[in-house]
Length: 121
Length: 107
Image 1 (cartoon, chains in turn brown, yellow):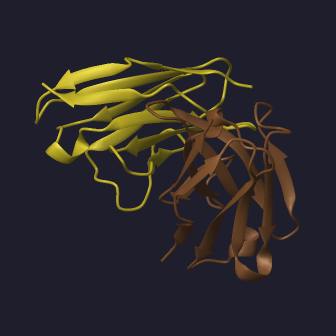
Image 2 (image 1 turned 180 degrees about the vertical axis):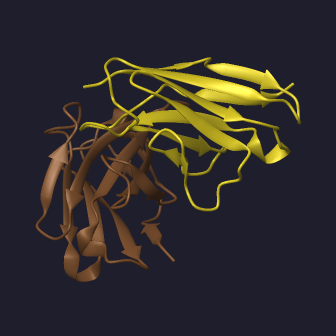
């Protein structure tokens, strides 16, 4: 059974750095893209970027390019989302999602439960 | 980026009703539309991809249709567990983009 297990909630201050994680299990992790999606409080879903664990090929949405870093450690089946300097506006729920290898295009078939990030000013 | 416009933004219905949510893409995306369900405080779950293919385990009362720029999600007979927010997402080109969401509430 496919699982994407995300790290726990974080409470940080503006200016601090942060890395959250997403560990995949129950499937061939290195051969499925893993994406990240932001959901700000009371708002909709926003695609941030995606990484292919096998070769670390990474693509960002233009809105998030330069704002976050996506990385992976394929040896422990874990993808990461990193901020070097947090802002209060980074407060949101962050989801990881697996890109399907069955459907065409950029469809995500399984989702993690989310990591809540709270950043105080 | 491809823009995806979803309507309505909210909808009130009763158990047993048939409801329809629509999604329009800013350009032809073939059949590359997905529908997701999100319940309060929970992660999104994928329901449908490629416009009409149900993700495994999704009840058959959910169906999708459309191609090109116009797409529809239909729930044939609402059940209590279906009251949630629904999102469409184009998965034709990168970055995949989401509609604004439709909140389905109990009348």
